[in-house]
Image 1: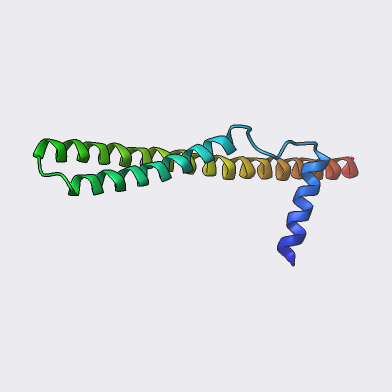
Image 2 (image 1 turned 90 degrees about the vertical axis):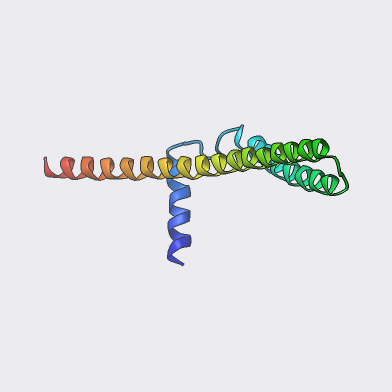
Length: 117
């Protein structure tokens, strides 16, 4: 229950400071593009592998292998896009939390100095 209370308090503090916490507008499309690239690369590599099994000429097999490597590159690029957007979201939340905690500490110090004076 402590976690839920802290989460609710954090959301309230973000709302009190009128901070924007919804993230970047380009995160969702980039994440979807990353997923689609990963899926397309896996499907393309599988299809080119199956096509290379039916071929007997070495040049055709080599071209199919090049296509499979290109599809694998799509998988890597898609995974990189997906991971980059996920990390950006986590870092954005962390930075927002640091901002709210820093503001709370500054408010506490200001209150303590006013009471002392």
